[in-house]
Image 1: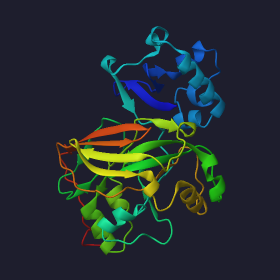
Image 2 (image 1 turned 30 degrees about the vertical axis):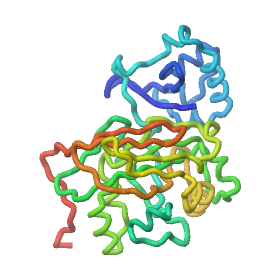
Image 3 (image 1 turned 90 degrees about the vertical axis):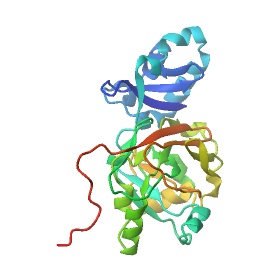
Length: 314
């Protein structure tokens, strides 16, 4: 099931929808029509798609209801963009975003780097997240900025020191992320043996969505075609099967050091074909079965230029 959150305009309240052949259906109204009890994640004023996705019984029941609808009976459940509905993030703000580095060998090679001997990961700021259609904003003086298409794993059940053979039991679903990277900042920090955080954590540098696709709908997350196009020109075209470290290994490695909690996100790395973007560009990332994430790139309208260098007093 493809879950999403929408609202009527930016200020409207969040509504969980399910993407079907009829359009985006109001999931709560669909469940009520079928006399299906709403899970806690859907009945509150602050809906939680990850909690909904982790409720296998509800997802199965809602899926049957959606499949039983004909166009006439679905009409009053559809929330349409032309009526002012826009996508919001398909998850609540997660407790943490873990991102994999150099997890596609061809990407590591194009950056002149070796594949790490064990899973290599870093943190991305939750405040970097933006929804489908929102703009990636480039501050004045930022230098080179690269988009990176990535498959994202959403954790549905707490995971602490989970062995790889049980790791997939903790996955609620999958989404698409653009791991936007301020490359000049990243390279400068690497040269100083600093972590990657600054160049990955800027505001708007984490487009996510539009859907959270439940785990039951993705038969093999390592057999999905991933493409990234800028202004219609394809730059990245690979399969998630090219990952060096697969999702069970990643979850096992990360959960060995920290507890992964429901709603946490893991971005699994990007393939080769990385190149810069500029204001006026449009980025579209497509992952087979998960939909497409589209975001424009614009100059940051802030009057105050960002500062990216160290203070000389330090």
